[in-house]
Amino acid sequence: MNPSTEELLYAVDLVNANEIVLLPDNRNVVPVAREVARLHVAPMEVVETANVPEAIVAMLSFDAAKSAAANAGAMRIALGGVRTGQVTRAVRDARSDAGAVTRGDYLAIAAGGIVAIGDELERVSLELVEHLVGERDEVVTLYRGAGVDSAVAEQIAASIGGSFPDLVVEQFAGVNRTRSSWWPLSSAPSTRPARQVRRRRGVGVSRRLRSSRSPNSRASVRPAHARSPRWGSRASST
Image (cartoon, rainbow, N blue to C red; front, side):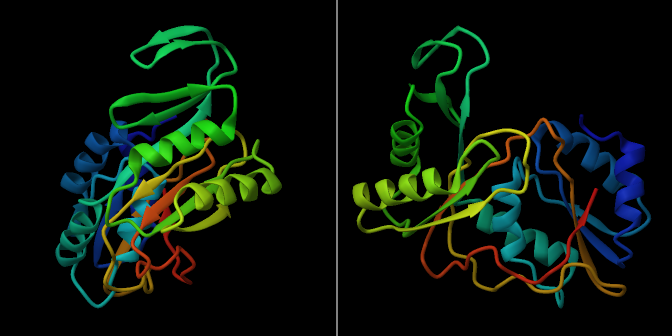
């Protein structure tokens, strides 16, 4: 379920910072996040992240020595090169612009809708990456979900690497353990690694915690010098 304004205000209060950058991680939460920014006493910037991979890209641009406004600007620049997608399972028969969907099919979903349908996770994942990858991309990072075994993820990563020999392919376990899906993304390079996110004084970042209904596997495609999300920062989730 999406958080209410009251719930999000409470979570933002826990950040305990002079200025705040709020990452909603869901398009449906963006209006609530903007209302929270209007109501909260601390200066607050809302960076309109639509999912967790976008939040990862944004947080890699975070610099605790800069203001919330400066950080938000850097994050929006980084997000300007991001393309996100998801591979998930169909829960019912349906029709789509990409063709007929049968319950249990794997669906590759990008910003424009369903871009690939099939009964093989590996093939659909490849089609999604093919749809998303641009000429400047150098790294693909896969975030797998609860229903994707690590060995399967490694096989998919190897298959992507074989089909795209110029790309470096990484894969990580996702943060949501209740549903299976992949999130690929591509982004412009971040110029600085993420640093301390939550501070008693300075700028804090608050990221909304995704509900159990959210997909729990993701992937990312980006230039090689944009570091993987392995920072030691702490974010306040709401």
